[in-house]
Image (cartoon, rainbow, N blue to C red; front, side):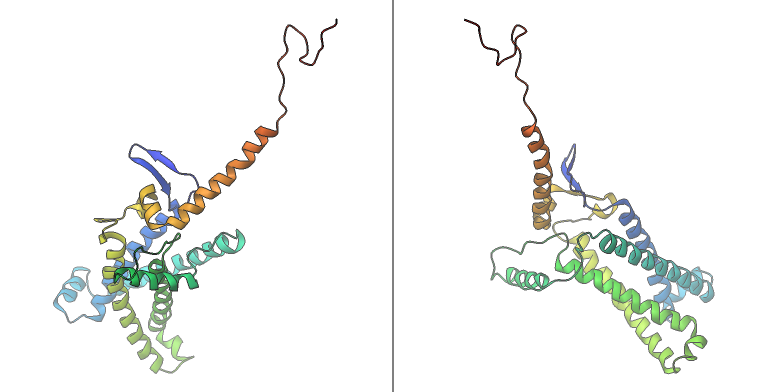
Length: 264
């Protein structure tokens, strides 16, 4: 998040997502969609729609090729994401905003109380709320499960040299179940939470533009907004102090120094 607010003709806004994060999201959007389509048509290949998609793509082998190709792309992206996290939060020591904390449990409880009318105000969130953290870590966990089970099925002979054949059957079951769970999670949880809820309807474009309005910052991420305002205030203090401590030159009058006394 940029610590400096900018303004355009429609009001003040903040840079919430860097260009690399927006590109990463677009790549993930494309990869996940194609993996979901090519994976589910293989799992439900007897269905009329799945059979039509398979035939449109030229048969089952092209479908498998596309699925495995984008599985590799997802694996590369996951490695890139992990390296970037290490660089950002370990080497540069930036604040790890996505890590779960005890406050998330409190926020979840207060949110439930607010929804059932037992609390007048919703909890105040920082850069990410507990729902966004749940979704993020579910994606991380799902990617790990899909990656391991997918490569086990892709290389069954190599897998059975280390594990028994039952692990291939288990991997297939886990891979298919996780695929259904992931697709439903995106269609229901993410689509509503990011686009169809009252605050962002009909779509949240911040992940594509990188910008979020001041109004949304204040209402959706008030703790982050307050911290940014405080950081801006503290950053301005040294400059003010430097000006105040600078020597003041007294003006001279008629070529005489200001402390010059008259001779009687």
